[in-house]
Length: 391
Image (cartoon, rainbow, N blue to C red; front, side, top):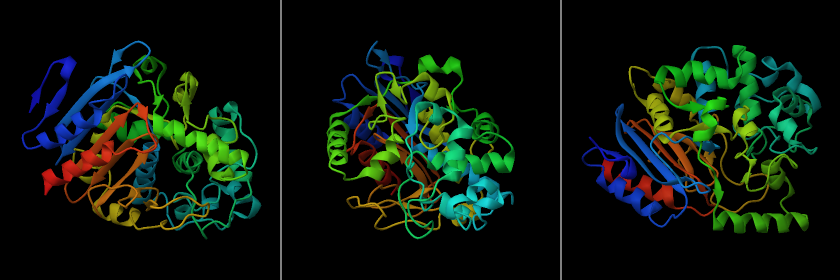
């Protein structure tokens, strides 16, 4: 394994050169923005690459130690926490949410199962009332609002992507079971033992190192169309799922807006607000599927249970195919998001973030970028190159 200078940083094990070429190709014309790729194989770091600019305003370089917002890849981390609680017998996927969170039973939700709440079948993908930024930043206000809300459809009968609200559903379950906020429990169970830079709610001193997210052309075009549709009364609930009715911009970021804000990054928003280095995120997924630095986060039988398909096919609110698939919060391999195959579990994130583990090949993978796109083959091309290497 070799390392190069900070200006051309890379850790690359023999045999993984095609993956590095795919990464280089993906970021070659990415002027002004940056990216990182990390891969662990059989508990060993084999690829660690960084390129480009972490902060286009200052020209600060993206290094191997640059943390970045991972958006919905945070849902994968929360799913690991829940699966571990199931493994320890402290949580039951088949139990009712009210068995742990009694207030959740309001407005016809008393029969909702944990498995339904965490697999986008809760009917709470968007708030019925407009949220403010203060609502998003205040844990008790966010969770109480969801507990009180009448669902948008009968829970368990359909699925709709809970883009932001998912994190408060999973996070409050963690809090009720452990007595700890999800960010604290994540540090205790995962980040500290693995010695990785990953957070759900960053410490203030980390803020200056975080990559600044930018909106790429395809994401800009998509959000313009979504806003026009909203004015015509189309796509109201998927739009509100992202904005929460005003707490966030539709792009999720902007100049000191959304997930570029210090207060949002420091808050615990576990549906989309996790921050990590690519190396740290990939190491976590490695430890999910194989012993890594002496740590195995989930047993094989826990992975088998938590990756049983819960949601797939046509969603409740119309959206174009292909559609993703989920297990117990984990995103699974599908036409919409290609991983290595049926033994993969993880979660992608807005704008091009991809993080997963693969049990069969003992891979932990993370690709992060601060140029957010809606049409984005970058990570897909890198995963395809990795698959060819492993085959």
